Amino acid sequence: MYAFEFDRPATVAEAVAALAAEDAQALAGGQTLIPTLKQRLASPSRLVSLSGIADMKGVSTKDGVLTIGGGTSHARVAAEAEAYPALAAMAGRIGDPAVRNRGTIGGSLANNDPAADYPAAALASGATIVTDRREIAADDYFQGLFTTALEEGELITAVRFPVPQAANYQKFEQPASRFALTGVFVAQTADGVRVAVTGASEDGVFRWKDAEAALSEDFSEGAVKDLTIAPDSMIADLHGSKQYRAHLVKTMTVRAVRAAS
Amino acid sequence: MHISLTVNGTEKTGEIEGRTLLSGFLRDGLGLTGTHVGCDTSQCGACVVHVDGVAVKSCTMFAAEADGCAVDTIEGQAAPDGTLNVIQQAFQDHHGLQCGFCTPGMVMSAAALLKENPKPTEAEVRAYLEGNLCRCTGYHNIVRAILAASGQDLPAVAAE
Image (cartoon, rainbow over all chains, first blue to last red; front, side, top):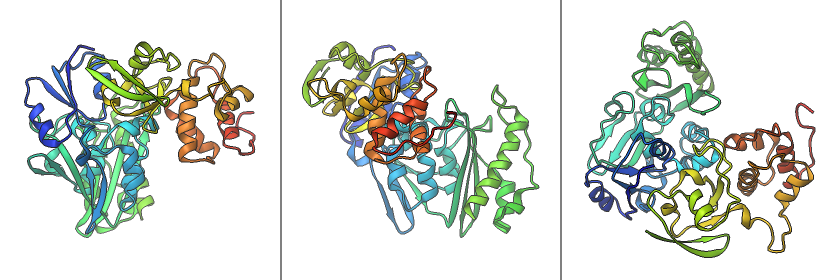
């Protein structure tokens, strides 16, 4: 790993100021960034650790909306997000216990790994990404592989999840990495059903609109069991072909609907 | 940069670089070589220590982030006279190790599990050890040791 300066500010304002330095990089839980630095795939001049910012940690619920601080660990979400059981269960299956104690929701959403779990939860829930300077709807936030609406130096301070009437996340795990080979998050609200898929597409997390339309009419396994999704834009690698992932998208959707209803 | 932290109950200080990993500081800075570095990619879990009471992979945390924290390592598990703690003793009694390389991480993960869940099921033990790899034992005796350390009767473990 190349050398860098290290800052550990105590407030969001100090962190944003420190990130204005040239080639500065925010450090959340580090569970992706530190391995990346070791491989010299990134070489920031300055790392700005967010772990000392108490205001960015915590889980609270008010008026049917669950708010999670951007620096909150997966373990804490798993333990404290009782108001949204499907989200707590998803957080409790990320990586392994030691990874969950360090990794954070803000870090996961800022990185937007195409096989990460949180992007599916945020997109299916219609979450709002709150940053140091604005609020971004999940539909506008995810912009492809490792790409988001965040500007240089912009920090996720919190994420707001409207709690759905029913929801479930089904992950078909890659057993070595514990990332999603394909994961599907289904959320039913008064406005309809949203279905978000991670791990499957070359364009990152996406909404499966055909399934959403069918499930908004009839929230049952039967509504989706005859649907198909085109394999063209799916990921193909040694773990699974495009066709296999397309099949998994439907299978995980059926399982999620079964578990949620 | 300068850090001060509590390691196994004792105040420690050190001069580090920003890029110094917690595993490196413990091993090279403090001479606590019981924390093993296996993969150095946060997969194998040989480097697991506790930071403020929770298990972390010390190869995937910067020492600078442990400034002001309480860190517990394998060296702090036995009593000062060398008497093994209940988990270590169970690993010995149930042959929960062969080469021993993964054992410090296994013991620290087991300690974290039993703190959260004092009477885990066999399935819960196996799930909790997802991030700890052992290439010798096939895990059966590790799982038995942790169940024994929890004070439960030992069930017949699968594949016996």
